Length: 280
Image (cartoon, rainbow, N blue to C red; front, top):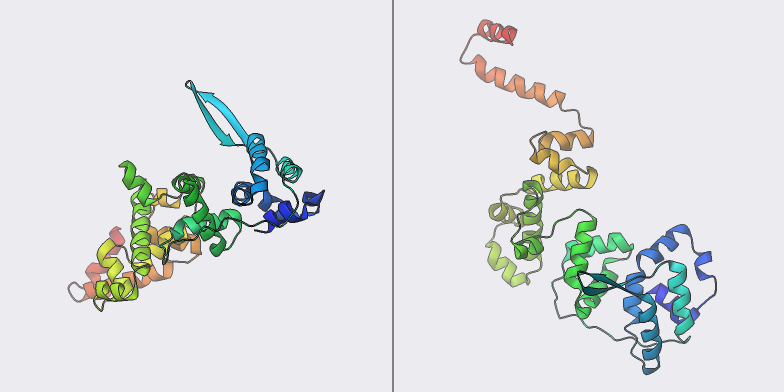
């Protein structure tokens, strides 16, 4: 990680002053990950400096008679200056956390983590391994999903709480089943699908078509309250999707009316149809 190298090997005074605003924001966002990475240094001489850093970054609060601890890095300036004050300047070796072979990562979580840290998915897979190694994976997943207003199917099933809305429920079912099938070994996947294409299989299992999922995903990504509006009955998936896309549906509605009118003309006279239209 580039910032870790700056802290351990470079240690340049005023380093943060030379960062662009985007780079500074990235440093601020990723301080928890930088700290986790630093704690992976495996050399003996770093033990005492890490203890001092831990004391500086730990905040203890009392709640209901119990003490709670959490990281408090205060600011990028405090975090960086405190690190270079205690960490001897040199190139370090880090504990290598090896993931399980053919590990099935939670890519919904990894995508959000990549979005949050502005890092590539490969780096985020390693961050996920670190979270898991430190025993904080579920906590970090929950915090990130809450931050972006997403809902994790596994968390909600474990708590027994209902999903927040039918639209989100449909999306979660689709995504989880799709990821489950894609992560299967090729032989098992072929056996499961039995010659059926993946789209059709997912639809048969979840009741959600790829078109429906794609529209819901577009609505979720482009409208803060879009899914809630659909669930409340205020609008429909098709209407809101077209509205967000700027698609004029008036022409297609007229075409539908003409199609129905032609069918009706086979059963009733044109005069009767005109009479019905006049009464509308």
